[in-house]
Image 1 (cartoon, rainbow, N blue to C red):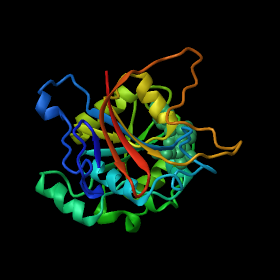
Image 2: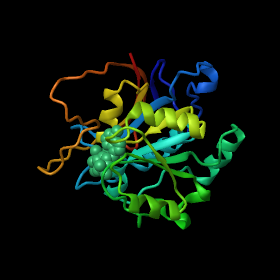
Image 3: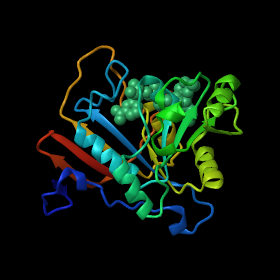
Length: 262
Ligand SMILES: NC(=O)c1ccc[n+]([C@@H]2O[C@H](COP(=O)([O-])OP(=O)(O)OC[C@H]3O[C@@H](n4cnc5c(N)ncnc54)[C@H](OP(=O)(O)O)[C@@H]3O)[C@@H](O)[C@H]2O)c1
């Protein structure tokens, strides 16, 4: 159901964000512009985004359905290495949405992008295995100077394309977006976490929108501390958002929130 903007409207879950169109590069026509970036996350009522290191216990089937609708509207889905280490996951859309993407002139599957830092990548995860990637999704690893060469060579042997950033540290968000635009023609990005990568993109000022599913759960555990964005900096940085839409599902009790950067 759509609650905002009003008046409220009955809407089946499959239709929430089903016809989204993000402003891409072609539309703006500005060559200096970086791709449009929307973050998508699910959190508990107390703001936790994982329990026992995993996000999968938080969202419902409806949340995953809406996530697929968001993936259906973008050129690339991006996650940090920490998220692929955390648990098995994919960056794809189901077959029926592949057809919808093709009808919109997009590739069958969004480009899958993993941001690597200084650690190893979990190459046994299905996301890296050609047989585990739905409909031959193209996978790109954006690597920093400190990313171990062996893990990148092995990922490349498994069919991933490796793109190196110039900076000395971790891949820097603006450079990542420029590389995706220049090398892979990416105009729209769905950033699906985790908190470290979200924090780094927010801090760089490149996030345009935030989609947040609020799950009607509270996690009480001293181990679960992650919220949707993390920072190592001591100073306070604030990003202000305006509410763009609110949907709900009485069946799941979840709220599906969309915010635009002010
Ligand atoms: N609820 C949700 O919607 C949701 C979504 C996604 C993830 N999660 C949860 O979040 C947790 C993982 O989050 P996380 O913060 O540990 O990992 P993350 O943000 O997924 O990945 C962080 C890692 O990515 C690499 N990296 C490359 N470029 C980076 C940059 N510019 N900024 C920051 N990191 C960069 C670094 O790898 P190295 O470590 O190799 O240096 C860094 O440690 C898991 O528990 C997962 O389940 C929840």
